[in-house]
Length: 181
Image (cartoon, rainbow, N blue to C red):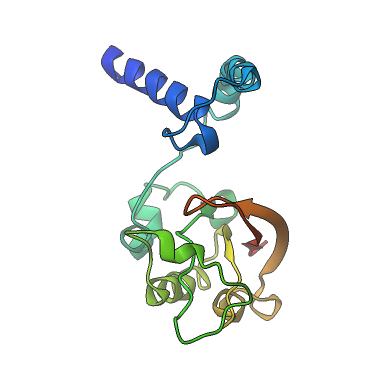
């Protein structure tokens, strides 16, 4: 049961993060378009709540959760085809001894991100799971993600040209979504 205090905190958090630039809760604008966009998001909350009524969204340490995912998430009653997992790990820190395609390395901006070895461990684990999985990150020059998540191993990928503002400046990047379905 959620308390009134928790509901008020959730409302305030929603407002702060949705009215701030880039949704990070730090920089705000007097731009009327942001206010109009915010009102539109609030109006859509009821639709979102209805759509997600039977969806369980969790935030777990993946290395703890993957030890026995069915027990961890209490999913014994579902078969593997009914479970979908989306993973959004911190951006990959390129190994310093590799030349970058461009000079921007967003993974270096995280104070508490994954190491290269953490990414490799995660990929080893998920490449063996039978659940439907989607994971996003950037391709690195070593091809780490593509070495594990490739067509030969039953994975597809889709690229999206995007911009990232990690680190305060805008950089063009190609985000990749890998899927095993």
